Image 1: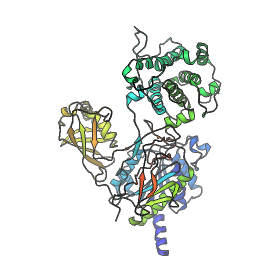
Image 2: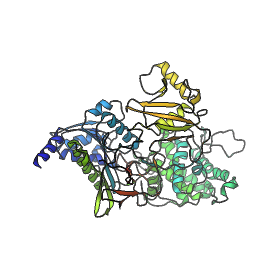
Image 3: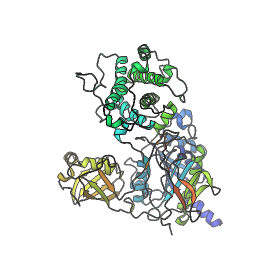
Image 4: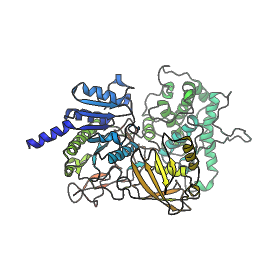
Length: 629
């Protein structure tokens, strides 16, 4: 017993550990590693410290706001463990410097990330470097720790991960029935159209209601146009004229509640709307501009009526043009941008009012738009401890002792921590088993660019792909290309598959590689003429991979990046909320086999910083899966 403990202690002292992520889990993890005897720790984190991090990321203080998380975390731990070596990198783990050779120097890699893309990238590098990976995630009271060792356990991508639910464009633009539809419309269409990239495609109707108008885009502001007049014109167009336009299609409203067009004259008296637009900002010039502060609204949990929402919208629009005009044209919605949240909340509520959908407070709307599920520091501490326990097991080399451990919100058989034996590798996993994939696609109309953007990068998560058809290289991404090569590949991107130098037809086999990730896979092509626009919006269908489990988003409290995800970290690996979480308490044949039944209910994950709210990725409901022998 003593010799075993000594051997374990020596393994810990000699280990070289890589931590990815220095946020909620990362702070707890670095502290626990240092106090457990680890002497050589490397940390990678791209983020800087924000005020909202301070309530749980205890290594940081207010004076550190704006500084590198990795560097500050290192300095904080060295104050009470000065004799250990901690190397910090303020960088993106996907940077070229963190390649397979870099990963090979470590005995184990510990993840505290908040997004699927980075997790998949680290998983692939660990597989290529043959370094064990300990994954983790928390959201609210739920958490998980999983161990991934090449050839012995499943990899991170062997099972599907939850992704935010997407909504048909027609639902968002014409027939919203939930508040989340209004949020998506306000954030991804209206906000993007007014303040984002003007050249980006957008499904919002931009044509003027004025007959004979020469203006092709109503969102363009005339040089001499008064800002108040412009704001009222936009208001009337999106909440009045566009609704009336939608009402002209009688077929649409046969079985639906008809919306009510809202014009500024109805929502606000003329005097009020003009006064609102020109009122003086009561906030300090040095502070971040806020429509709420300017109008005297103090409680973010108050639900504004139609008139108040209209005032906030007009004021927010004015403040963007008055205080942040240089940013217009390049803005992207950010949940930490107070003025952006105010604008989106007001716009979503006005649209909700038109369609008979209950209004929401700014606090609730921010949760839906920014995907927020509030972090629990205790859960992060528990998960960090479990990560270190599994890391020590990995260093001891006895894979039979590895456990996937789930932290539950309510006891199951008097247990809050549910240990489960890891699953063996999924033989159909295209990442660790190199199983060929199948792509249904119309080879006569689909361009190579669409396949690369939607499938190779979008679904397979490759960063710098290379595409070969037989022995013909048709595309390569990355630096170091000759000018003529880059020009040739650019031409290929705009060609339909059947017209490439090596034509892609039914039965063609594509070889796709990413040298940075040292990942290679084969895609067999099946030509198909027609696709269902609702069910198959990409115009192509990929089979043979672990398709993400669609995670619906709702507005009731919770958690989710882009497209309406949900938590205080990022839409990731743990399903939270009472209706959505996987019920790990339904234990089957033994205490280590349990069913994870999940409902279709939704949740929202806020991307507060970098890890705290992730969605449990592993689906432990696979009772029939083979266990490690």
